[in-house]
View: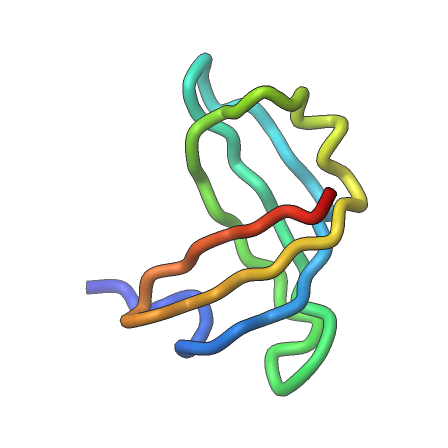
Length: 76
């Protein structure tokens, strides 16, 4: 099993890249903004949603990791 991207906790982040993997999936790269993981870039993949990936660039986000599983909340 791979190590989790981030330890359990809540992280303020910003979207630095987003790409469409396929018609149903978007890959989002985020940079953590504070704390011991500050500057770490993580990639999360999930359902494409209604937004064009380019519209996600620069969007503030919160990453919450519980039991090694990340959840992403985009602001706005």
